[in-house]
Amino acid sequence: MEAKLQSVVQRLQERFPLQVEEFRGEAHVFVQAEHLLHLLEFLKTQEGFEMLSTVTAVDYWPQQQPRFHVIYQLLSLQHNLRLQVRVPVNATEPVLPTITSIYANASWREREVWDMFGIRFQGHPDLRRILMPQDWQGHPLRKDYPLGYEEPQFTFNFEEINQRKPYAKE
Amino acid sequence: MGIEQKLGNMGVVTTTLEQAVNWARTNAMWPMLFGLACCAIEMMAAQASHYDMSRFGMELMRASPRQSDLMIVAGRVTRKMAPVLRRLYDQMPEPKWVIAMGDCASCGGVFNNYAIVQGVDEVVPVDVYIAGCPPRPEALIHGIITLHEKVRGEKFISKA
Image (cartoon, rainbow over all chains, first blue to last red; front, side, top):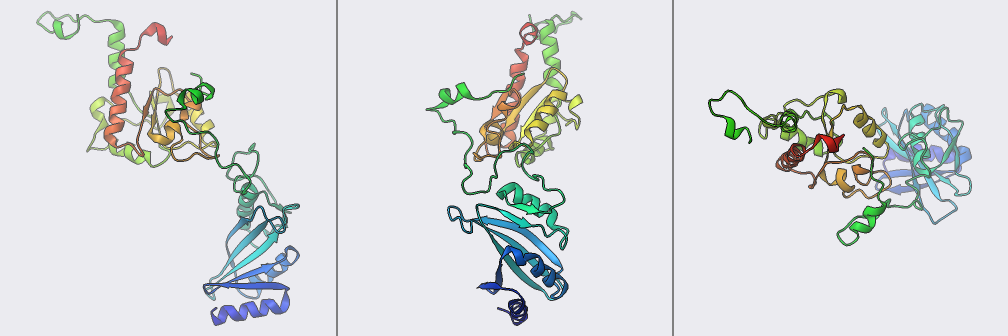
């Protein structure tokens, strides 16, 4: 890990209860949901991480505790540093506080995570689906979401599928 | 009793109304300027000077569905795009035709998942399916000529 990044992580460890993992010179900081807002606030105001690159999530189904990791990828332009903040989320209550008050661009990212993974963001100003149609059922990027939609039509089952295929009217 | 036999010096040509109308329809069938994915690139290539669809009276890609006769569904249709596609089809004036260009538009292609409509014939009635991923411009032009053959054989009674 780079010395600059090392010192940032060290200062974080002094203030917050967190675990740190290193992967190819990048720091992954694991923090519980209740410390998330304070941590990000600190990173933005004190450590110069002024930009939120992305918010995304991982589904570790069938593991339940925690089932998801929500990932905040931060970028400091002034120090040329990147930092990944990971928050574990349980399957029983997939809820996190929104970070739109700190990083305004998190709004659409959180909508995407809600749409794809079904993780609610408490206090979000407008938590609607962003990619799928509004009346969609389920959250497609969850591991237990059915992958396929229709059986492929081959020569041997052409007639069978043809009969129940919902063809359009004129 | 076609036009060919009557092209003497007689000054009169006889044909049927059906033939005359279908001839006019096939030779100025304006497609809609509407591409959804990589197939649209091949559609543009078919339109451009090297393949030149204007040989078949298709030099105009109309940007408005109100002025177009042919919808070339060039690419995969997502479930979110499907109502838009249907709406565009509904806005086209009769008579209208649809070509499903490429595997994705015909049957979903490699995208057998929740997001993609498995064949655009679930949304609009398709006249000609073109295979290929994406089909080359020759294949698209072959599909269009196949559609022209179909239109030339259309009867007014059955269409109504």
